[in-house]
Amino acid sequence: MARLMLQVMKFVLFTIFVVSPSTAWASMASQADEWAKTVEKGKERTTTLQFYFHDTLSGKSPSAVKVAQPIQQENQTLTGFGVVMMADDPLTVGPDPKSKLVGRAQGLYGSACQDELGLVMALSYTFNDGKYNGSSISIMGRNSAMEPVREMPVVGGTGFFRMARGYAIAHTYWVDFKTGDAIVGYNVTLVH
Image (cartoon, rainbow, N blue to C red; front, top):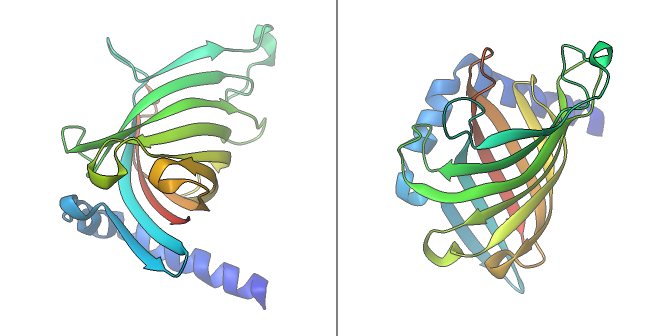
């Protein structure tokens, strides 16, 4: 039964974000001042965050750079297996890189899969807006980057998000396969 529910949820998310991604994510972007919401219940709070992650590998000022790669060239695969990137990516309220900046994602990610684009992510998402200013969440886990919708665990937090646990749903809004530049929409649910 749980497996069936999971498949139904994946199908619904796939339908919402793949069949009409611009509609779903545009409605999130239109609520620029409401990128975060916190509800208190007893001793715990539930916070939802909606923002865009801008990963830029090209140009004069990339926000992510390669810091390691396999030594032997013949071991290179189409998935970039073994490549490790260090990132300092802006987080904004909308998909436009010039939309309001609400934080930065800093840390590393690397290609950990030989047969698909599977990344292992270890990033701290630090926020600079409103009551969340100076607070952060940590996302660590597998990111199947070519899947239309993927889920990653939130394993901790600081400041307002101290002792956070939860999950992040990521959806690729835009990608340039030549440069590797990407814009990813995030919907994060936290309990803290």
